[in-house]
Length: 128
Image (cartoon, rainbow, N blue to C red; front, side):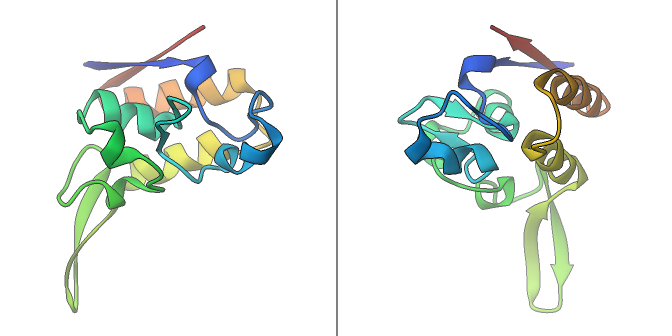
């Protein structure tokens, strides 16, 4: 099982009250990683630690399919009429929904993300 450690102070999620007001757009799931803040959503942390993508590759990308050009832990390749297309897989889409849900407390969000990623052989660890 692979382990991904997420520092809560560097975790962008549904309601980041610690963000400056002019940067609040980052708390709405619009970025995998922000190099200036050295922070990212749950998928940004997974991409950075497991897939070893650089911050430059992740910076301001909104979805895993924008980072990967093939199937990965977060993407899959779909055959379309016009050719092959890399899209977010079910894990990525579920993680986005949980990470960005403004109605969830951080405790509930962490619990749901831990359970979701565990099903895919990834251990999420949240630390202060």
